[in-house]
Image (cartoon, rainbow, N blue to C red; front, top):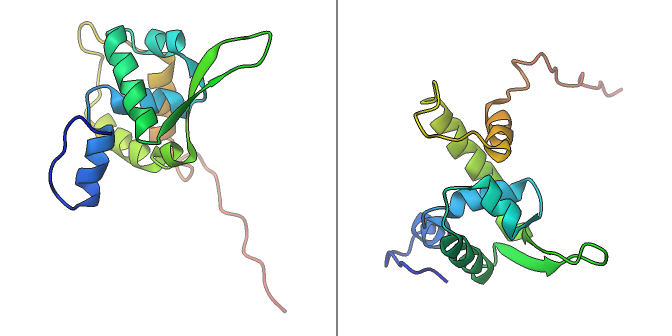
Length: 142
């Protein structure tokens, strides 16, 4: 499963063994949008070497976080998608993204803005209360 074990009986340590390798969390971020082909994942993470992407996808599959499936005819492509277990990471990734977003001002030289990073930014920074969304009125019982 993990190429690195922390040797601690701790939920956070176990989670880091599954998703703590470089690029893993960003691959999961991209798969939260929906199933993607290898080439789509690489396009959304252009700085990741293809051998690392292959390795991380295999690790995510072994951990039960992602799965690979063939699309039916006429597509005939293989896509990667998160399992239910992998999608359970969404609240943690949103919280981590929200925390990290506090440091964003302008892109640093060489930083890319991808569709996936923008989608996650919207998801992490959206606050319904600030957007004027109100809770439904409470119903009264007789």
